[in-house]
Length: 310
Image (cartoon, rainbow, N blue to C red; front, side, top):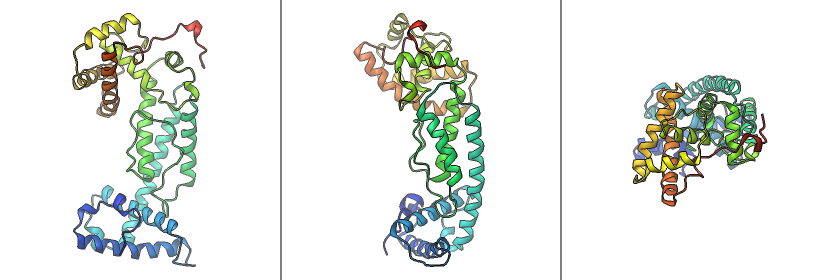
């Protein structure tokens, strides 16, 4: 018997012996036949290979969600009737959809006043996703138009509404962080970095936090965001002699300082910004070796040279 489509990604088969795994495959094939009959409304148990793959992936995702969210063990998939577990998983899916909609509403209420076409296309795409998401036959599918990049992207291994929920949690976190700063300063910083930021594929929050962490290195308030050439020389004096790992630890302290200044001291924020720290450290080490921090810590152009989109 060949392995069903997608099962190795959606069910952790490492939990099973070879014999148990083969039993699971057999049970899933039987479940797929039932599901296919429902999908075709009894007209046929035969569908295209592509449709069969989608239906099976949806079943695997729903079962995985049921097991993990309900605190069950995976051996229940070898002994229990799978249909009730699928229905239980679908109830959980409905609940997660409502939770994700609430997150989406919070994201919409906290959208920063900083324009970017990819950001707004993604917000609209998520709304369309809710309108068309099918928890019964295509629960594993996720939006194809998540075009706005986050500092911390959800893992590609996540499927369906789970991916959407994590994406929205992370986007909301970035919204809240950006709203701690004067949006006019963020726009000025972005205009000084990439004037076409409003229509480019880039994260709006990253450069704000990088400049804020640079000011923290200097013991200054993170809120003004502007960094001068003299500031960069002082930073180089502070960073000289550090390797990448030392720099990573040092930047982590500065990010913590920024969080404290913004009164964002929760564990989620600190853990979230670890991704920023890990990505910034090697860039900073390379810039130190080149003796030029100007491409990392940006100096704002004078206001009279900025065509701000306010």
